[in-house]
Amino acid sequence: MTAENQEWAPILQALERRRESAQAMGGEEKLKRHRDTGKLNARQRLACLFDPGTFVELGAFVGCIAAADATPAPADALVAGFGMIDGRPALAGAEDFTVLGGSIGDGAADKRYRLTQLAAQERVPLIFMLEGAGHRLTNTHAGRRPNDLQGLADLSGQVPIVSLVMGATAGHGALTAPMSDFVVMTQAATMFAAGPPLVKAATGESVTKEQLGGPQVHVAVSGVAHNLVADDESAIALARRYLSYFPLNAWERAPRQDNGDIGERRLDGLLELISPNTRTPYRMRNVLQLLVDDGSLLEIQPEFGTSVIVALARLGGQSVGIVANDPCVMAGSIDANSADKATHFMDLANAFGLPVIFLADNPGVMGGTRAEQSGVLRHAARMFVAQRRLQVPKFHVTLRKAFGFGSSIMAMNPFDGQTLALALPAVTLGSLPVGSGAGSAKLDEATRARLEAEQINGAFHVADRMVYDDVIDPREMRNALLRGLALSAGRNGKSGGPRVFCGITP
Image (cartoon, rainbow, N blue to C red; front, side):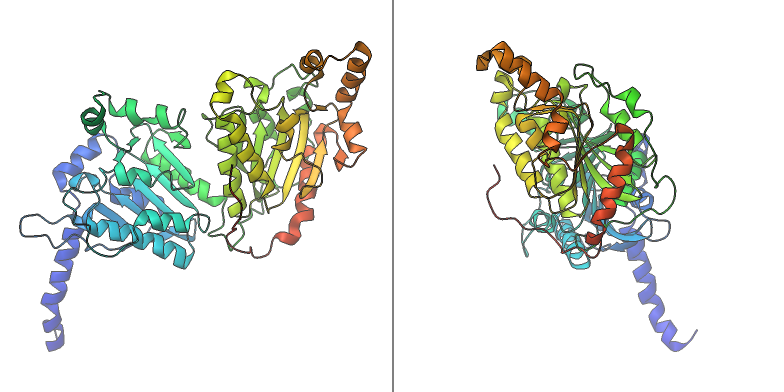
């Protein structure tokens, strides 16, 4: 060993000791307790997320120097860094529940903001894995700002943002989820602004973590979370799959798949799935499975706002977004929750350049006392504004029925920027169904009969005025959409970057 190496040896040994300490997490006892719950630890989660051997840690030594009356907090309870997901770069942070309950110290707060700053600067997706207690009570809140939530707000629409809720997450940490594009909860997860003890102290209400913010609350009722999975591995696999539909950022285009089921084919089974009788329900999911490239359908928020289905898929190898009414739920009527879901999804597709396909089969916006009290008109207006603002290729197909504002918010508006507007031949159209509206309008029998005939032959009456570009055989729907996507290929160069809109959202 040279003299120079001898001088370096103790320095490098000290570095290695510090690195080992930084990677120790909460110690073997706490790691075992966490493992016994069936969960991965923070470092295992990151190793599972990124392609093998590609993870590079950032901020490992944050928290390694403790105040006189405290102990070190390895990585300050947030393991963060970057790596490759399916060969493409991404950033991620995983809260470490084994260190001070995954709480956010001042150092970790700066690390979180650093991740948002890097994601914006390098234009790569950002993933958070959440299991923590929110801000640490001992925080001094000294140092620079803005904070990570401000960073996420600024980052929105520039790169895909994903949150995986993998245990109990509260307070500031929980706010990361609704600031994200896509939120996945595991069966073991809970999420709330304040946990049961704080709720008890503030309101006197006694409630469990699960009752307060478990998956049954946020996946099915509040809509804060999008999809539910069984465990950590499933959540991470879903995040990787979700990102595969998107470009790295709003300046790029989504990657294409050039093999497999990407060509034209007739949908002979569609005639068996969809009855021309508007009173006969059918499952829209079955239609979508048949329509898109085999195995490519990924439904988002399947348990919330269920009268509308929103999904990512591939058509001809190209990533697309789908907004479709489901006649099996309230005949496909649009209520506040389904409109809210569709609005968020359209904003997401618009931000990252995904063409949007609308499949309309609904009797309109939901009516009734409960619907009005839910603000359905405002939510429907938001959905209308979202589809109006789409700057991506927009496709509309009326499958069977479309009435009133329910047709407008499903992008059936004439000359409204659609790349292609189509109808199946047995559709029924109008401002409202004659059967339910004739009485209130005091129509005589002759007028009622005439309007019923026009509604039943609505596709041809409307196509005669160029509202539809074509009326097609249902079995040709995939092929027609593929040809429409080919027409829009001129938009497939570099994107113009994040979209900014003026005007006030309803």
